[in-house]
Amino acid sequence: MSAVFEPDEASFTEQQPQQLNFYHTEPKSFATPPAVSLDTFYEGRAMSDFLKLGIGFLASEKVQQIFLENQFSGLQFVPVEVHADTVDHCFAFMNCIADYDLLDPVASNAKRFKEVIGGYAKVSSEKLDKLRLLSTTITHDCFTLSNYKLVYYVNERVKFALEQAGVSGIDFVPADFAATST
Image (cartoon, rainbow, N blue to C red; front, side, top):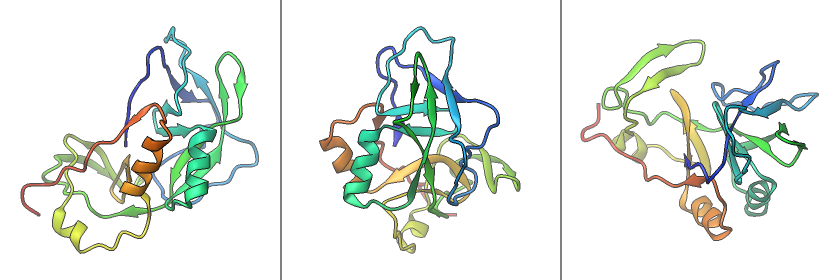
């Protein structure tokens, strides 16, 4: 999935204390919902079904319901408060709890592997290793990569359900594979 800004849509930033992260694919729980606020340098106030946060997506209630009804796996929805012109409690952070080792770091020109995040901080052109993919049993509907967490992958069932529902704010980009496996 890839972010698509709708007309007049802004992005958001998590307020302090920052609790959301995508570096560790594990369930998260907070006594108080994390708060995100509209980036004030945007004039627009439109909100899509997928709000953009520097560290991932915030899913609308509509999207959460689609995932619930279809029992899609691999994601946890973490409730957040969205501060724009009003406070909205209908969005949740899309926390990936499934990851797979599919990135081809050489073909992707991956740089700056950081132990603290368990992955690469920069990838120039994300390429998957086709042999790894073919030898891996993907058991989740949604996942990220074990060593590069800035992306969400979804299967055709998820893509179809979200497209049928007419959700806004995302696009589906086919996975790109390295020419040869490393």
